[in-house]
Amino acid sequence: MDNQETLLQYPSSSFLADVRKHTATETITEKEITRIKVNNPNVKRRIVVGNLNKETVKFDPEIPLYLTNNRTIQQLYNDKKICKLIIEAKIRRRGEYSVVRSEPTSFCRSMKTAKVRIKENGIIRDVKFYRMFCNSWNCPTCCKRKANMVRREIIEVSGLNNLYYHLVFTLDGTKIPYEYKNSELNDTHKYITKIFNHFLTLLRREKRDYVKKKTGQIKHFDYSQLEKELKYIWIIEFQKDTKNAHMHILLNQFLPIEVIRDLWMHVGGGVEMFIERVKTVKGLSIYVTKYISKGLNGVDGSNISLDCGFKYYERRYAISNSCERKPKNSIIRLFDILPTFDLKAKFLVKQGLDWIVNELNNVTDEEVVEVSFDT
Ligand SMILES: [Zn+2]
Image (tube, rainbow, N blue to C red):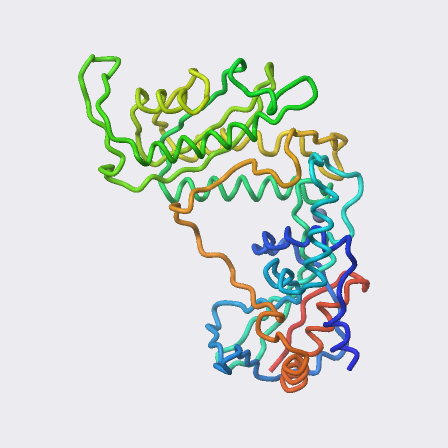
């Protein structure tokens, strides 16, 4: 009974305000294990997880099962009480800049995931509990980690999609509208994101002749006739001197600079730009992602004032949907498969998995983890 109650308890509002960040916490590395001592695990049982249609989910013994009691944003939004708290928190934080706090947020490492390895016969081999990092840009424990995760992701995706072309877009200081930059504010990153989206829309419709600068030849550009689907990643940086944003774009194909320049100027960008093919994708992605971790030193470093110019909800980079990605670990959320009180109770008791859920909910205990069973 105790167990059922803990499952249904809602966390405090300060936690809820930032819970969306947990959705990014889906990659777990062995390094991040913390140990939790479980007394008398009481299971040598077959694990069966069903979904709502009562179908049994089959497990590949090679692929571990991840169980978590953490909820997704979508699940939280379905809950009216929680939804209201999230909206209030959003309003409260509107316009706030992303600055690294001196203390980790209350929700950082307050949730756990259990990695359950199963034998061929369905019996649990071992269970490891991981604490989940909040992964927010302004947490001193996680900012560096988050930056590294983003870097790794960009390097991985650019390699996977052969993003060999490097395009740089700049802004023309005299063309930036007053509402994006004045003596009191610098929202040039917002402006560049906006015009970049406009640029993409126009590019997708583009069909025209242009004169090649180097040779004077007349060429034809037709976006719909491109051989490959356009794939890209963009990353925003601020110029050291002017503090204006500029954009590095990694592309999977060459686009004629004459066409790009016209469009970029048309949407309100600056004239300075270049496109080049690089020798190695890795070198390029390492170079363009350097900025992401700049100034982030986390708990042990002294440099904690990350006034990076971004507001906490603003994007610093984006990966186009057309890019292929590595499959992520899939996590089975107890809230996904067990949405009702009844189902939860039945599931846990029947399978002897209540101790796993207890452990997931127990975050005050000493840090210990790893449960294995002899057969
Ligand atoms: Zn954190």
